[in-house]
Length: 335
Length: 220
Image (cartoon, rainbow over all chains, first blue to last red; front, side):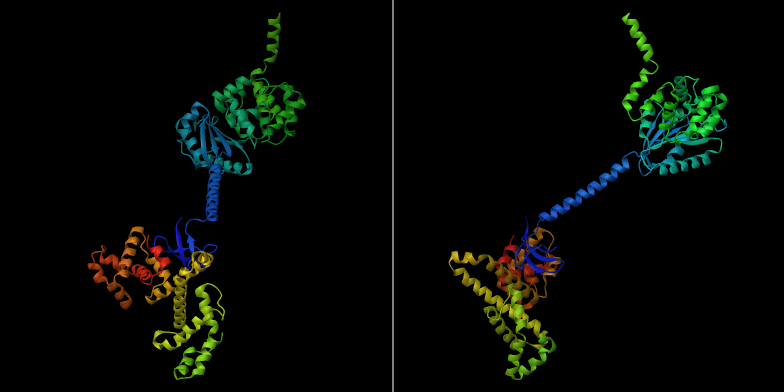
C-alpha cells in the first residue's frame, strides 16, 4: 500500500507527500499527526462502504430490470387471428405470441417495449390488410380483447378502454371492439391455454356456455378455435357483434340467447344467473350456480369447481364423459 | 489577547529608541503567543518551564532586533524566527540523542521520531515560504507521471549537490536554467525545466536543508 507523509491538515482535506514524490491532496483520515505517516490505500471502512454502495446499485438496477421484464398483465387480441401480448408493469409490451396460424400472420415485427395501444393498432392494421377484418361486411367484424392482470385491475381496465376508444375511432364504427376481463385470476389464463384458446375466447366461451345446453361443447370449442368468434357465433346462431358487445353483461347476454334457448332450462338459468357475482369474477359464479342447480358436470365447470386445484382439474379433461364408458369397458373385460 | 489591541509596531518604535522597559513588557505580553507557536510546532503543550519555551523567548527577542519594517508584519516575522530557532534546537537534540545508547533510544523512539519528522515538515514549510511556495501549490505542480516525477527529483538532487547551482538557487530564488540546460547530467528540455521549476525547487530544498525523512519520499 502506498504511504505518504502528512504535511498540512485542513478541515476538508490533508496535504501529503507520497512515497512516490507526489504532493497530493487527500480526504482527511480518522487520525494523523503532521509529520506522521499516512496510508494512501483504501481504508477498510471505505471499502466496505463502497461495496455496500455497489451492492445497492446492483440490487436497485436488478429489481428495476425484474420489474421491467416481468409480465404484469396479459392481453389477448382476437380478430380471428389471435395474439397474446405480455405487458410489464409500465404498460409496455414485453412479450407477444401468436395463438393460431392467422395470429402468426398479423403478429407485428418483434418490436418490444412499445405501448399497448400502438401494438394493438398495428395488429389491427395488419389484420385489415391481410383480409381478416373486412370492413364492409358489418356483422362479421369483432375485436375481442381479453385481459388478465396480476393486480391493479382498474389501471389495466382503463388502459384497455383507451385502446378500445382508439381502435374504434381508427377503424370506424362498423367493428365491435370489446374488452372482456378475467380479473386478477391468473388461473384463468392457464386454463385457457390448456384448452388452446386465447384468454378472450375462453372468457367468452365461459360466459356463453351457461346459456347453451343443446349444443356439443366440443363442436363449440372447435368452432371457436377454427372459425373464430364469428364462427362461434354462427354455431350459436347469434350475431357475432351482438355476442361480443354484450359479452360482459349477463343480463344482456341472456337477451341475446333467449330466442334460441330451450324452454324450461332457460327460465331457470335466467332467474339464477343475475344473482351471481359480478362479471370479472367469472370463476365463482358458474361454479356456484352449478352447485345450486345440481347440474351435470361438464369440463370447464368441473375445472372451475375445483377452483385453485389445477392438476386435479387437468385430470378431469380426458375423463370427461368417459367414466361410464370406462367402467362398462372394465366390466366387459372382466366378464 | 492583549497584543491584539496594542499595535506591536508602535511599541517596537519605543524599543528601538532604547526603552528597555517596553521590550520586557512586549515579551511579557507576547508570552502566550510565543508558547502557542512553540506548541504548534512541536505538537505538544509547551509550558513556561520547558526548555522549548526559553528558546522560543530568546528567538522572540532576537526577532525584535532583526525586524525590518519593509519586510511585513512583525508577528509573522517573529513566528518564523521562533520556529527556526526551535527547529535548530530540535535538530541539535536529535544529533545528541543519536549518540545515546541504543536501548535508551528505543524507549523514546516512537514519540521522538514523530516529533522530529513534524519539525522537519515545519521547517520545510518555512523554507518553501522563502520561495513563495506552499504545499497546496505543489499539489498542482507535481508532475503527474511517476517517471517524470522521478526525473524532476533527480534534477533537484543534482542542484542540491552542485555548489554552483545550490548557491544560485538560494541567492536568486530561482533555478539556474541556463547552466542546467548545458549540464550533461540533465537530459530534459528547458521547457520541461521551466514547467516543473516549482517542483524541482521544492525537491532541491529537501536535499539542501538535509530533511532526512522527507528525502526518503523524493528518492524513489
